[in-house]
Image (tube, rainbow, N blue to C red; front, top):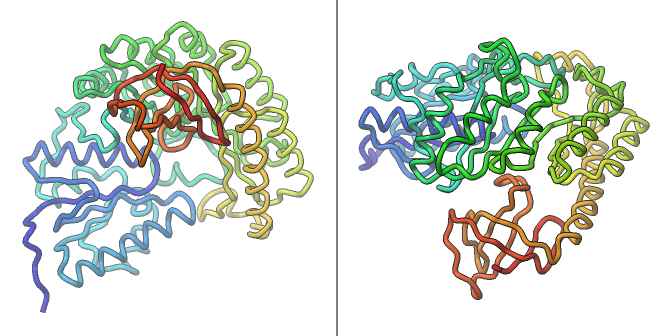
Length: 433
């Protein structure tokens, strides 16, 4: 016999996927709280909302497995209701409804009001920036736009997130002020494409103006830029970065590949020559800038020659931060019409080799930091160390600074000045100055 849980109407929000999903979950939780609902993030509750990712195969698999896990918990009487939202649900709703019919309801990425209604809450239009943040208290994501207008052949995001839609500057400033009032000191700006910001509402690329407004927010010490696009990059952003100490000398710009043939097939609108020139301009304008990029190997038609071109370029460019992924063949994308002809083991071998090269580059760059002094923010205590980050490192994806907790007491969320004593491939060891 099924036993109903005693946790009456506590809503547990589970987040899968990227920082954009983290942000969406936080907005959902803020709306639920404003309606007087008891809401938790990835804890126990008798009503479950799973915010899914549908980007690539691994993420889709994780989302489906999470849904199936909670369907079993529903069957066992551990939870009462399960709702599914997010990118997977947006993209595959009919399939999911057919394959996993006992989910209470499925919602897409733009159906927040309907989801709230199903949870017995009202959508409050007046809430700007009222979020329940799930990140450590010192940083928060600030989503400045939704959707994407880029035609990249491999990417399903426009199918799931729709056209690019910028959030007005005044709304983002209000949101930043509310975050700062709650103790947030670092804003991580996110969008599918930061460089496109403002074109739809201001008829010009307006990221620089947004940054000028955000640096005036009291309490915010660091502003970090994530997910820029190489084509049409607004160069006035570099001037603001150089002038304003609050803007981290850091840029996340996914470049995906460098072989002209592959870039053309990917519909990236650029070439090896143009991309290399752009990166040189970045480094000339802001010499201390850390550039993070991501690459895809194993794209349809990628020959050994294309891969060797990419490999040689990675060795030459010496990126401070780099991630490499294997190509995922996604339905309804332009590249899905091409033959997924690079064997899986070749894809993996190429990705591993790129990351080996990057590991060596990172080690060499880190050795040069020994003896240098950096301002770090302390994110957490883990084992015997306080774990911090410099302005050149983004949460969860980049290098960390480890400080011996037996020698110094540090507060999570506060800044400290440290001197690097030792360096590994991706981590620095330091002591407080």
